[in-house]
Image (tube, rainbow over all chains, first blue to last red; front, side, top):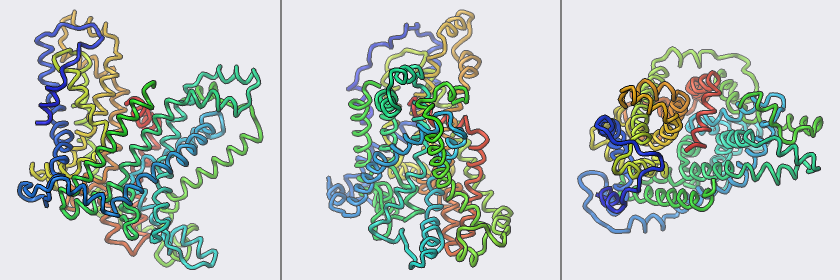
Length: 309
Length: 287
């Protein structure tokens, strides 16, 4: 129903700038045969679900029978008075802040080093990119072992120092830093690769000219490379924020949201506190909040930050 | 990303000796830190539990090949890999076919509502699958697809369409329009033009879309987690977690299992490195 109103509200725009080709019978056949499969699948599994999430979120519903107990905005009320959910929101925010302040600058620094002629540049790029192709679940589990107080690296370090075993993943003050480390390990190579692509698109003549005019390496980087890299940086900021909002797979094997529910993200909260308990209305509300954050961010960012790119 | 390009564009080189030695050393340390967890995982999979406790860093004193061998000769490992491959194969194929067909229509045909439909599908770029996971679960259950591979494949394809249609349509539009004019003049219809001219000329973009949707599907966790119940249908990501749950006290076995399950991805990456890197980054940049 929402689809129809949207369609009616938005009249079709004038034709594309491209020269119009007269529509033939053959052309209509293409439209009728080629378009419906994609549209159908998209509508059934992407568009309708997001509309339904909005609808279900107004109900107290365990998923069996039709949703009947209409409770208005109460699910949202429960949500925002739930300390674990607030903590999840904060955690998503922490990932964003950490990505912007640590991950992206590191990726940029590494990119500058491996975009050039340095020995083994291709190998370094490949090594740094490798974690990006590994499944987040596997990454989480590998690092669960690394952080293990009895066995992993942390265990080995404390043993070597003769200190009592330390369980980072059970430390409710610091456990979330483990998540941040895994995020850094897994994703910085992707951003590095974006920057490398950007750096290789920069005209070397510009830098040479500046060098001849006596600009120092730092001046050249700050006044030429960085501004020219702007579009790529804005893009990578976009991906790291959108990515940070949906972190889930890493959390499950790494901490399971613990200790004391301090390491959940919005999606893991949705899963552990909504879906596994069949609180369909409540977890739909989490989905809607996430949806609103994502869409607002994506629209706002593209309108404001990336409007010139 | 070729070597030749590297040589030409090397911003701020010539600083020469010391600086590049420092940079190289920093890169070596960083590369070591990145690779260490992977190697530690693979090596510790060769130890027995008692050695694992006392010597978590070094090479195994006694190589327990049986840790790996038992997994490789067991049924479970091959079953989860097979399931993942099956799911990824259908996800990629359907994504390519449906995206290319829709993209072709959007690239070449003007009709009432074409722009609206294009932006409608682009909505999929704005939010991740997780936002709609609850209603997707209800829908899959309603369709009777719970605990079936189709229940995983169809939503995955649906969520890849926005990216696929956008990338492929842009590539189709870049083909010279004289080609289409000439083909039409010779009485070649749209369908034959699509099959015999557009598709063969669009290999790189189809490969890009294939790489992106394959990696997404192969590494996917949340969707199979809510759709599948029977272990016999698990993809490797779920199989890994189930294995870990079962052998929680024997880390060395879990590590061997992790190593073997990430091995296909690592091998594929090493063999098709350029395609994969180009696909994943170019795809991101263009969409």
